[in-house]
Amino acid sequence: MSKQVLTGVVVGAKCDKTIKVMVSRMVSHKMYKKIVKKRKNYVVHDEYNRYKCGDVVQIREHIPISATKRWVVI
Image (tube, rainbow, N blue to C red):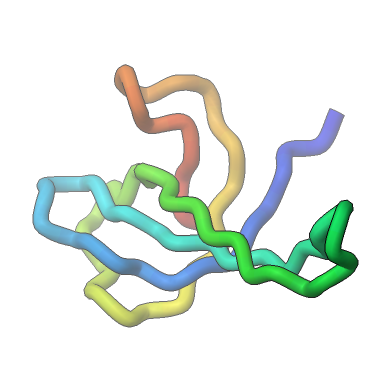
């Protein structure tokens, strides 16, 4: 089974070896048939502290690293 890969924007990089990535998706509303923008924040492992706020990154699923981190930067 392949791991899921997402693309998002770094919105937080204050913690050591951890960044927060916002992933946006366009979804059709079931009742009103309108296209809606949905956003979700993921806590991502950044081993070498390379990324800053505003960077566009690709993230991949991983085994749990901590209580909230289950993604790593590719």
